[in-house]
Length: 141
Image (cartoon, rainbow, N blue to C red; front, side, top):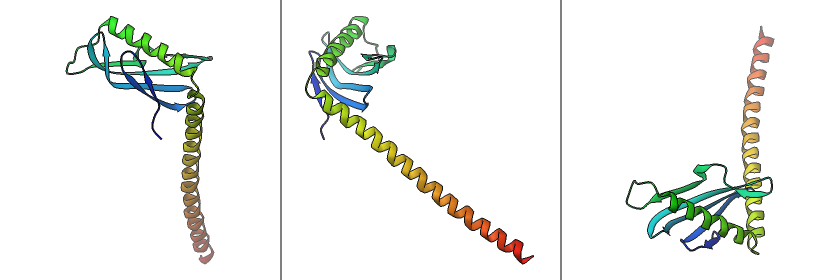
């Protein structure tokens, strides 16, 4: 399944949801104030509102340079992405994407639990065998 995208004034962002309360927006070729950047933003659903948790949730990397983005570029990217996300939330696409992300997260958790149970079953079988051997040795004394 292709990831959904959001078209903005600064670039086309892919939308990735790890679960129903976290989204990652990413564009490797965004143009903010006539400068090319890789831009990504993490948004979290907190108390019913999509928001950033801290200043590190927006990441901007200037192409071909180690210079930090200007405050104006940072502000513009954040504003554009928050507005675009709000519009995407109102779209008919969002509910299906949120549901698929929640199902994937739960399916992954079930698989991890099943793997752990299989490991524990193997350990239990090995311990039961060790116990039986010890009991046999004790009985032989």
